Amino acid sequence: MEVLCKGLTKIYPDGKEALTDLDLHIQEGLFGLLGPNGAGKTTLMEILTLLLEPTRGQVLIDGCDIRKNPDKIRPQLGYLPQFFGYFPELRAYEFLEYLGGLRGLRGRDLKRHVQELLAQVRLSRVAHKRLKTFSGGMLRRVGIAQALLGHPKLIIVDEPTAGLDPEERVHFRNLLFELGQGRVVILSTHIVKDIEETCQQLALLHEGRLRFQGPPSAFIRAAQGETWEFLGSAEDVEIFASRPNLVSICEKMNGICFRVVSPTPPRENARTVTPNLEDAYVHFLETARQAA
Image (cartoon, rainbow, N blue to C red; front, side, top):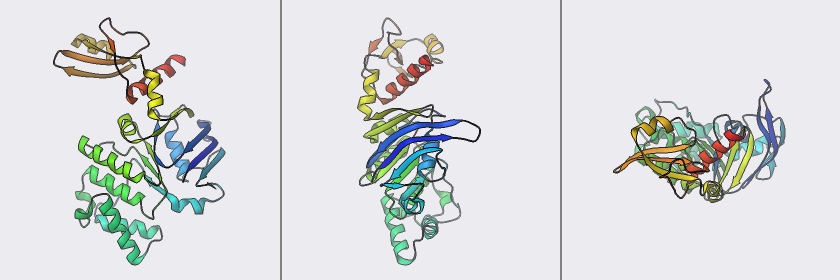
């Protein structure tokens, strides 16, 4: 299974160009989709899930053109949107059986498939509980289960860990990693750590164009030598808090630690540190802002 986009362009009726000549090659495993609001991520996901037609260009999923063979592609797709709708009065197994029926699954095969999916997302013990009693993390796992109905080869997940507590976030990232074995899982998120912890490849979109595709390690190298930490005071918080090149502020035993990306030292006492994906992302956005 692979996804291939060639010259993909989407222009909305109001003239807004959401994607411009996008060339993208996605293979099996977890693939991270990164970019600020308005970068074109949602438009790309809607095209890949057949909810939106491109203006120009071609998309091949497992070798099939999505415009020429939508009925052949549709059964291969699983989608978990950021805002996942469900029926709160239904029990977990009832909800999945209902959606499975809409996908054409029937009888014992459907019931067995639902039981397997509930076990896979670690919800077997609560299969008979109503969805209105589920936590946010449990509902996201139900969302993954419905995306897996029918054994799709391409799964697209939008902001999967948004609103989850740290423990649920770790569990969910581990689950996504398992799902990436033998299929394509596209993970679109603003939480950079989700991509850093799980994805071997990522694409960065900015203003509708592909700005980077490759392993996170290659993207991180751009911030090498330009990521700094220094200890400051409470007064420095007001100075640096509004700056776009600020990565983080945290309190330590010996003072307030500031982490900043900059081509030059932001303070005399600043020291260079090994960058991570979040540093590289801030570095890219700052470079793009200055070039605009």
